[in-house]
Each structure stands twice: as structure tokens, then as C-alpha cells.
Image (cartoon, rainbow, N blue to C red; front, side, top):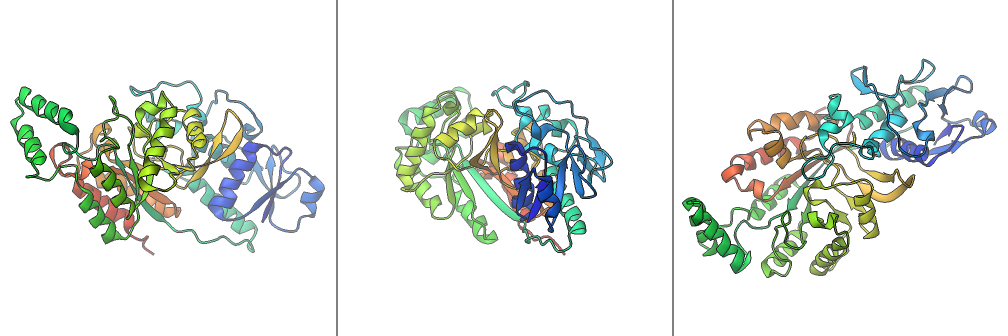
Length: 438
């Protein structure tokens, strides 16, 4: 146990200290505002505030953890021992920056509560982030700072022990559109054929017709391949199914479709299942309750995992909506237009509601790479993608974190716009599954 002296114990302080100590380092932390208790404590201890009490291990505070409310922050970023840092601290501090305030700023997504320009889908754009603007989006800096904290603690308190952490790879797959042509119903099938003919796209017309006549496999039906890779690398992925009503941005099959329901049950035998809240549910939150209920009725089990369709996150509304619907784990924390670490972290953490100034029970699982980010936003060729992803995997391995990958069933089709991306997926999975070399 590590005892922390501070002049004021706030919810922000408790939250970020517990994240660093209890969750990252595996060391319990306790707090006191009593100087006599702190002085009498014989075990590992440190102070956090503007100045040390005596000669103890001291970390200087910039003040953010003692504030309430949200205000504009002027944040110059500098390099210290090849690490990007901000919220500088004085010479009396064990570190030249306030890692607790910096960590809190990133994982609470403080900047996403501030005024900012949103993209065409009304999302926070990666290019608005402090991390992208200062070149550290592809580093899990919070974990890296935690590793430096561990080193300092080990040097000052040799008897302090740290549980061994192990790197993990977690692949996830979103099912936005279970099939390209099949099971869409007569109206949608006829409309698709008619559109292909009108555009004189005879190859698509032929493919659609052959699939509908069961003469050819649907190009989005890549589920046998997914299971094959899963069995080869011995992992258990997480799947997210879109079961919302049909709309402009929500075009999966009807949840009443027997083939679709059978597919969901089949995949549930081999993977964890979560709901993929529809784009429409952001404007009509009550839809989320219906979508969770639909998935629950198919699987006859509680649905506690989610990932937003189109990664549609608005702070704090999206997460509050999930909490109200008994979602305990969300996997939406990542950017659409860049790969990297949206919250500066590669391990899960609890959502802190800045408006209400409290830690919630909702656990956030950040992902680092999405197929659509590489292809559509970053304009990456499939053969070049693994080289872009490899450094992120190594960063995560260096801190024994969790590398989470987001892929889609259609991008494994190896056809048309996704030609070559099946091999890309396999190469990235191979990289991510390899054990760190000694």
C-alpha cells in the first residue's frame, strides 16, 4: 500500500491515482490530509501538492485535480527523456511534469467537453486533439508515464512489489451489414439489381443475381474465414451487431430475418457479443433500449457490451445513455480518421463524468486501429498498412497493455474496394499475436 498526502482529496484525484496505482501498477493507494498520520506512516508514501512537507517523495501539482468545472487550458507540450509531457512542474518534484493531471486530462477526454470543430458526422475530429497536434497520438503516453512512475517507486521503496502484467491482443469485429446482397428482402434486392442495370454496371448486376440465386457466396459472408483465423491464433474476439431500424446510416438486415438471427447465435458460440448502437439512436436515445432488448431476446443473455456505430461519441451524453441502459463496457474509444490512442491509454479505464465530477461504473476499452481509418481516411494501400500498425503494437507490448483491433466482415471479402485487405488483416493479427521477444 502507498499512502498519499494531499491538502485536499477530490474525486478527480481519487480517480486518477486509483487508475495509475491500483489498475496500472497493481498497488493499492490510500489518501490522507493529516500531516501527522503521514509522518508516522512507516511504509511507502508520497506527497502531492504545490510543495513537499519535508524530504519525502514529492510530485508537484499543477492544480487541475483540485478544480471543478471545465475551462480552457493552455497546454504547451515538451519532450522529457523522449516522452511527450505537459503540465510542467518545479524542481522539487520527482518528475518535471504533473503526470496525474496530464493523465486525467487525457482519459477524462477533457478536451472533448470544450468548444471544438466537429466532422461531417458531428464527431470530435482526431485533428482537433492535443495528441495529434503535438505528434503523440500513436503513443499510449498515460501507460508510458505509469511505467516511469513505477520505476521511481521501485527505486525509492525496494520492498514494494508489483504484480506481473501481460500484453494482450483483443480483436473486435463490427457487423454493420451482415450480407452485401442476401437476405435484404424483395424490395431492396430488386432495387439493387435495378440500380446496377441503370448504371450499366453489368459485373455487379451479375454478381448480385448469382448471389441471390445461391450460385455464388455473398461477398460479405466471411464468417468461416473469421473463425478459421480465430482458431489458428487461439483468441476469443468481441463482435458488435447493428440491430437498429433501417435508416440512412443504419442498413443492416431486419432483426426479424431468420438467417440474421441464426448468424448472431452461431457467432455467439465462438465469441463475446455486444450491441452496436445505431446512428439513429444518438438523436433518439430510447432506440438504444429497443436495440439491446432485441439482441437480448435473440441470445437469451444480458447485453452489457457496446460500440457506437460510426464511433459516434458525444461527451457525456453517449456514455450516460449507455449507463442508463445497464451497459457496463464500451468499446468506442478511438478515432475514425486516425489510428492511435484517443485517450492516450492502451488499457481499460472507468468513465469519469466531468459535468457531474464523479467516476462512473462504465468501463471504457480503447482500440488503436480500425480498417476504415486506414483505407478511407488515411488512404493507405493494403500492403502498406501492417508497417503503419506495427509501431503501435510494439508500443502496447512495451507497457504490457492491450492492443485492440477493429475490423469489419466486409473488409475481409478480398473483393472490389477491399481487395488485398484480407491479407492485411492476417498480417496484423500475426504481428499482434506474437509474444514479445526476450
